Image: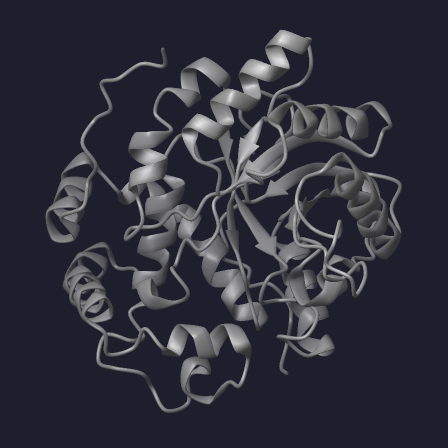
Length: 342
């Protein structure tokens, strides 16, 4: 496995406020989707977590649906970390899917209690609604999360992959009932997926103080440039039998994949001009957005953690001129939103 000591030349970790709150989270966070519980062997799991700790990462993200709940089993000094989990898919809680999923008050409470039991914690700092539940009334969802806050099971609640209308409706219910609204959203956000963060959510930042903890900043590795010339024979996408990887393999050689690969390859000269690799360029691009509180990354080995942290020193290199050049290559900058909520 090699040494897990952090390189001495890494930039100092940055900490940012989570939306309109007093909670500070590391700009780089470590997610449990691919890192923990079934996707990466235990030895590398610990090595990646130690690498994150050594570089100043204080935010670890997991969910009840990740690898049957295994990704939740952290063992660290509690007050040093911001721990989140997400509730919606409750396959880790029981075999019967009825009431073990969604955002009903029953599943919110039982799912959160089950997560806390796996974590060995009395509370999590952040609790997300892991996708919207359009079968449960919004008032029940808002009341459910506020009950968990009042019970001391979490400090803040937020959403993941909700649209702007759903977040605004949650806030309207919270205001009407004098309750706490969703503080943060966890969307997919990267150079290739931009519209929701840069256009759809535009009014939520000033009006609701929404903070972002986006996932997939490298779009499953596509933006690292390692697939510029096809799928390497020794890559995870070529060799893994994991169900997620298999689902991603279906995208290879499609027209969408080819168009994305073409754009990513065209970004290589920009990275070379800045003296960085494409992964650092892509991560820094996400972190340059002032609404991003923390970018969630996965890692299967410590070096990937260190590479993510190195991107912090690239942010200042992304001048308006460089950003314009990137936009021209990508050709996907959203138009500004001019509508207001009625």
